[in-house]
Length: 175
Image (cartoon, rainbow, N blue to C red; front, side):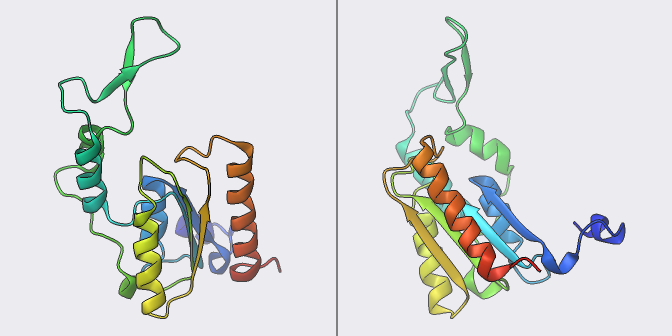
């Protein structure tokens, strides 16, 4: 974003960062001090990677191929399971990133989370919401009923899109 601003392609005072899942963690990291972003949006986002890994490990199948799942496009084939704690640990590396703390957040935040998300529990967003509210930080929380992590239905996608549009209208309005 800073490179694009130096090229005159974006107004650095008007950029909001958004992400889903682990991208939600990146967006929340972008809301912390020293960040160039005006606001942040986390959709089914991870707010505490260590807690996320503990939860994933508790819910994981304990066998040697737990990181695999059947590939519906190929008979008798497997592919990596994105929900596998072993795979998540590889993504995080040897050191799990720090949890997002309310004290570090410097921009308005939108947390959108699916009530029945089995990949990233909604408690991740609820806990951060509560901490942000307690710290008197600007936070908007939208919980989607009858939705999972992948926002598979039109109603889930529309609910998410409406929450984003409403948030941006307030926190990054059109000129």
